[in-house]
Length: 172
Image: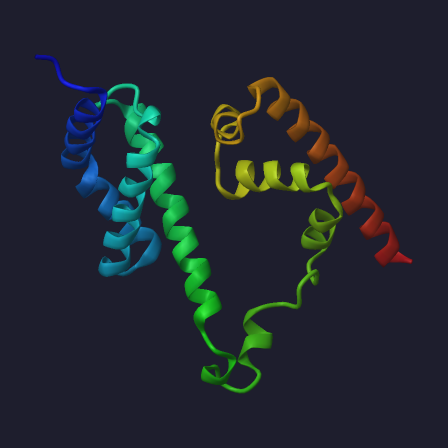
């Protein structure tokens, strides 16, 4: 009797976990600098993978490792963001939060990014901050790769225009 799709997915996930757990754990530790958090990030990544097994085309392939690395990176960055929000201001030395974190919109690039339409801003962040390729962004957002490339091109142009205008304004 043949195996069901669910049983096959479980076998594939188990194999992928055994193959890639250690390198992913090491990668997460380089981002998080904490073994327990790195373990959590890897576990959360595999939980995500259980819900989205379609991302695995071949068990032992560089593409699978890359796919998992991106998931681990996002999990780790989410953990860092959450950790940053969990610090109470009372726990920080007087005035230190002002030195560590500039006011929202204080940086010219940040101000310009906030003026962009949400979709352009999202694509730029995924491309340059999260370092995803247009093909990966397209898969993530269920868009065509060519649409992602065109929108990124327009977003870069709009961002340059906004930054130029901001520079001219500050020179007056």
